[in-house]
Image (cartoon, rainbow, N blue to C red):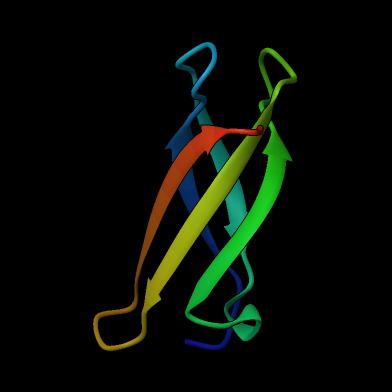
Amino acid sequence: MTEAKSGSYHCVYCGESNETVVDPTGGSRQVYVEDCTVCCRPNVLRILIDPENDSISIESEPES
């Protein structure tokens, strides 16, 4: 998996679904902050990329 992939997560504040683009060159485990497209609050995204089955797992949590 070398090209950017999209994934989705639910905002921890308002619950709305958000799409994000994941760059696999950042490694199989990534953490970064992205603002919700609906309520604009920051979500910490924990991303796991499984290169064996080309899947992306995204968990969101509130920024502390």
